[in-house]
Length: 154
Image (cartoon, rainbow, N blue to C red; front, top):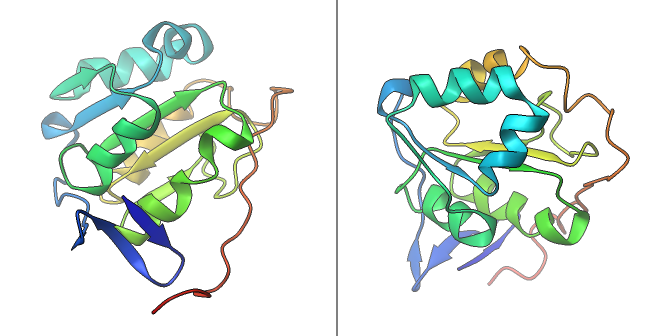
């Protein structure tokens, strides 16, 4: 998988696009660490798990590959560091998705990541607001360095 700001997202040399699923009841959710999600955001986690079509433990890079290629609609991480999440932002966004933290900030400094196909993002942020995690209460930062504005594109 390869992506760069302004250049698109590609997997096996084919362009990637997120899915067009617009209903949470049909959403496939990836969570890197379900136990950490339940501990850090119990109301959000419980509401999402009750609402979504399925939730799997496909996390880290593979979960975001599934999101970017339209084979999942949501990817969630709790307690991530910069080196965990920096490459994921352009991958998700160049495939047409939305990437941020549980509070909706695009450059997360909270240690949380909420990425989606975009169509579900407003509803997901509403569920995330049930808890206070993701609002600069975590000392483990997860900032994302901005892209090069299309530099390096062919």
